[in-house]
Image (tube, rainbow, N blue to C red; front, side, top):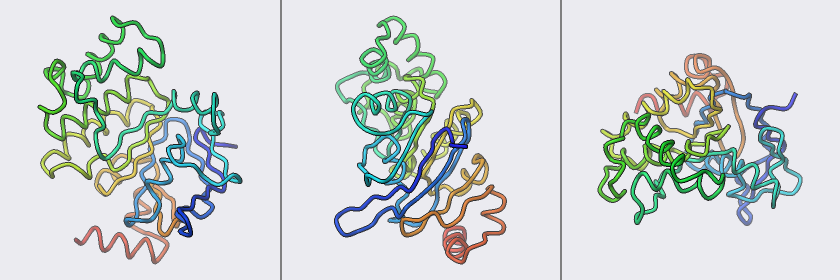
Length: 245
């Protein structure tokens, strides 16, 4: 049975470099999956392919909620259901925090200004920064900006949330506040695919952990299995280096 997010034979090359080498994965609706692995292993490329921010080989197939990730109208339908949070916050500096969150629902879903504003205020409360609604992004800390970015992605009421190392650009003291928001989100039933270096988060929140190396999925399992009893030498080596650092 195909997953809610279904990936079959995913291949992606940058010139002669093969970044993804025939990955197949099925992720269930409501599942929280964390992808870990060394830098350059293809983690970010993988999740960027899910909403086609990266093109991929013609023989590769991805679908989200049964909709094939191709081009044109089908791709627009997929992107309407997929929220993405990046390392950098990508907020519009000339818009207030509230307006940043309101913009996509109004433009893409045709939501009224009043409804978009109400939704934005609810989401800003949910991520713990309602008092920043009328400020501009440049006046906020990195952790606050990333929480705005999460609220903005949620404003589209996506079925799937993709996180591409959302804490890697933050100062250490701001990481916790973003992870707390993501932990609360993990209990709401939204499907989450998270590329992360935060092993504690993966261990605590993920339903499954995927270890990638050199463009391949090396190992998949429950956090307890992956962290306590990894089956592959590459996984063991990576975890011993990271956890003993």
